[in-house]
Amino acid sequence: MKSIVPTCRSVRGTNLVHPLTIVLLACLSNSASAQNLECPDSVPEASIKLENTPAGWTPFVARPLYLHAAAPIDGPPQRRGELANYTEQKEKGETSYTYRFEGHYPDGKWLQCAYGEYGQITLSKRIDDHIRECKFTYRSGQKAGQRIIKIRCA
Image 1 (cartoon, one colour):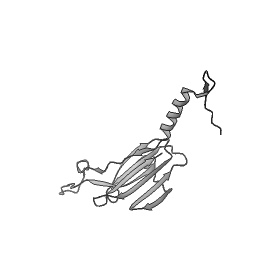
Image 2 (cartoon, rainbow, N blue to C red):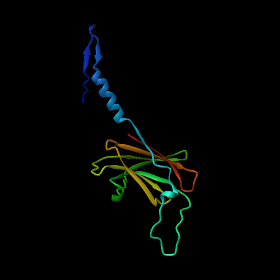
Image 3 (cartoon, rainbow, N blue to C red):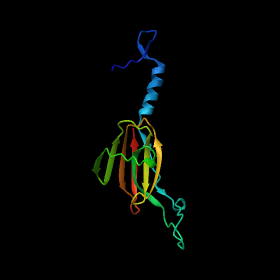
């Protein structure tokens, strides 16, 4: 497909790019640029509430739950739409997972952040429908089970 860029002729006959084209190209490059998403580092202990505990027992949450995993999901968290199609790469103490979004996502693409060593709690939010790929780079954190995760989407 050949691209068409409107031009204007100056008085001297040289081609100039039409100002509207510059604005359109700027908008396209901004929408196609990479987007960094970020999971909160932890779920604070004050946010964790234990209700309906067995009679006679007093609940106490001693520390926060730290970020342990993150991944894109198909639809809201109740759907449990985990995506299985990804590539994995390991190097220098880091592991990266790259997800390519192919197909239709009628309930949207979501980012799910999991806390606790077994993902006991998750926080999720919908991400831009135009995102076509996300790379999640993991490295170990300082706390037990904690992961530092960088997310880059385009």
